[in-house]
Image (cartoon, rainbow, N blue to C red; front, side, top):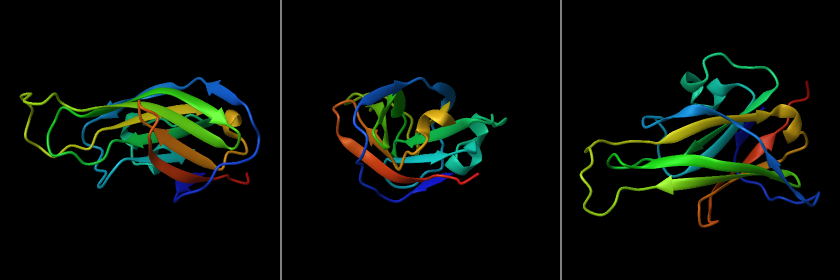
Length: 147
């Protein structure tokens, strides 16, 4: 299963909170551009395979990316994951350095890799990345595998 593009959400009602495993963060994800979300059954396909070198069967890996930043001091942290009908909603905190803060002058691309039980995502069609204010930062289509 791999994610890409945009999709709308519809279908089953009711929000279900999903437990997740944190596989770690990086400041150098290599991701260009703005925030994005990637979902796959193999952590390597998220672009963050180095954070979960031993893929566990039955897991669905979710990579969240803050986008390219001009300095250090930025981060993204998954706070909770919910299933809302046929959508996964990933709630994150995006952090930036305080004005005037002393930060390293280097291009960074903060990201985090988490995973959920693959069964809990059965029938999911989209993944939505929301920031701490509830603003949508990214959306992707989830393609279900047929195996």
